[in-house]
Image (cartoon, rainbow, N blue to C red; front, side, top):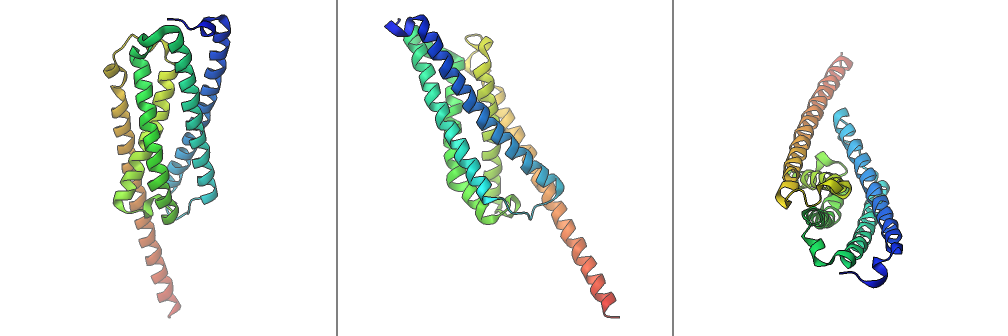
Length: 217
């Protein structure tokens, strides 16, 4: 099934341009998510749990990632439309395409959750470890889901050899494992940072008490 102009050689250049912008949007989002996650991990490793997040930076990050996600949807639909015009309904039977669409849909819903619940709570608390236990677990899981989903979708996007070679279940087998692994690692890291902060506060109180006792002599 071919549709006129879309089957012409010019369609290949149109598709190339759409794929290029699709890739740029994906790179921007992954770069921002990665740098943000690295900064958070560094903060936890240093035990700096009392430092407040930069609200302006968080709002800019939120807006840019949202725009990148919108650009991904628009360019992705464009690519699908061009390919469908050339290949027909059979194109949608590709397990790799199904896996990528499923992950992007999940990523979109997770983005709404992050922007509507997690980020406002984080701004109010000022720090990840100052959140209540339930909100902190939600923030960690949502963050792990976001990070894994962006990289997994990118891997599927560039993985041409994966098309039609593996089933949908096989393509997504590692996806939940990576999410659970990332979530578990962040839970352990935040627990360690919280204990380190508690020990630091106890040592500071002990030191202050000794100084006060010495000052009384």
